[in-house]
Image 1: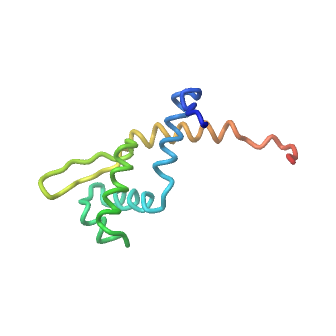
Image 2: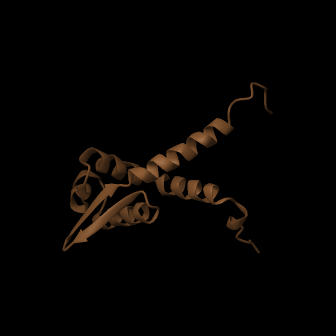
Image 3: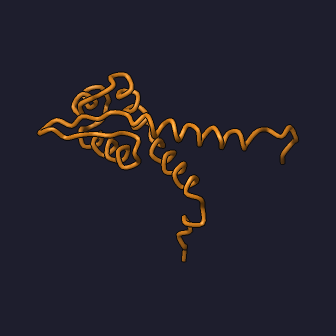
Length: 110
C-alpha cells in the first residue's frame, strides 16, 4: 500500500512542486500568456482566443487560481482574471535556487 509522504519534504519544496504542477499543461501556459498580454481578461475572451471549450478554459482557470498563480473576481455573468505577479516572483526565485543547486560539476556521469 502506498503511503503519502508529502510531509517529509520542506514547505518550500512542496510549494515549488505545486507551482510546477499548475504550469504543467500547455493550455495553462497559453492562458497565462493571454492574461499577461491583456493585463486583465474576461473568461469569454480567453475562450475566443484559445481552441478550447468554455468548460475546459474554466477548469484550467480554476487550477491556476487554486495554485495562487492568478486571482479573479466574478461580476454577474463576467469573470475577470489577472496574473498574481508576486507568486511568480517568489517561485521564480525558488526555481533559480533549484537551477543554481544543479550546476554542472564538470564530471562525467553514467
